[in-house]
Amino acid sequence: MPLPPGSTVTFRRVPADFGSRTIERFARRLQVEVAQGRPFDCLITGDAELRRLNREFLGKDYPTDVLSFSAPGASVFLGDIAISFPRARAQARAFGHDTGQEIRILMLHGLLHLLGMDHTTDGGRMARAEKRWRARLGLTNGLIERARS
Image (cartoon, rainbow, N blue to C red; front, side, top):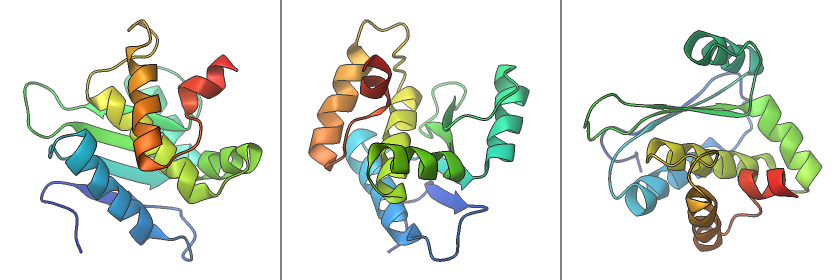
C-alpha cells in the first residue's frame, strides 16, 4: 500500500535487507495521526549526506542523527526530514532496541519540528507531545528524554 499523496520515504545507503516497508507504513501513520493528513517527505541516508545538509542549511559542519526542514509559507506540505541510518543503528545499539525503532523515534522527532515545535525554546511543549505520541505509537524513550537523563 503506497503512502498517501505527497508523502515519500526515500532510502539511500541503507542495507538491502532493512525492512523499509515497516518504515513506510509508520510514515503513513504519522501523516494520518500526528500531522492530521498533511504530507511530509523523509530521506534515510548516510552520515556524509546529513553532514552536507547540516553544513549547507544550518552552517554546522558535522553529521547528526535527524534534521527537519519546514516548507516555506502556509503550504499543506509540511517539509522534509533527513535521518542518518548509521547514527540510527549506533543509537539503537546503545539504547537496546532495533534500528527500525530508532528510525521511527527520529522520524517522530523530526515531524514534531515540522509541526512548529522546538524543544530548545518551547518550555517543554515538544517534550510533552513527543512523550504522548511515543506512548500511543509504542516507541521507547525519545531524543529529548535521553538528553535530560
